[in-house]
Image (cartoon, rainbow, N blue to C red; front, side, top):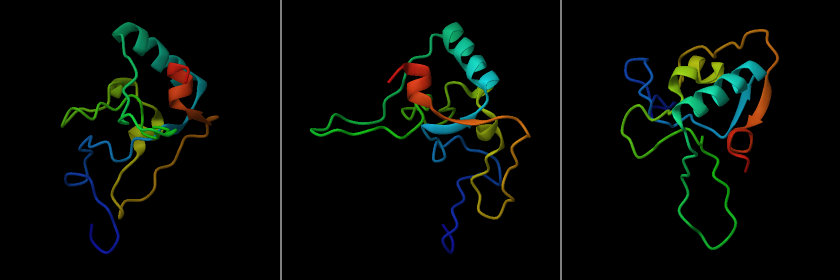
Length: 115
């Protein structure tokens, strides 16, 4: 971090560190369907990131991010949503632009794992 600007990239390229992975993402219906098919084909299960706690807690990280691995943490990387493809976690890069398609914010855990 330099002057309040984070850069988790390696010379501007994604390091797949998982710092940007979120449970709420804008997706199209086509992306959702593609991810469902990929999950079924590859037997992908939910990855939980919280340790058991005494009170209610909600895991806000992406359930497809396997943080037990140092690299290649995204378990749906080949079919990840457009926002994940375009996101650059470097403060001096221009923001990405979503295509003129209909996106809805999706609760990823609820949509893909029924929570």
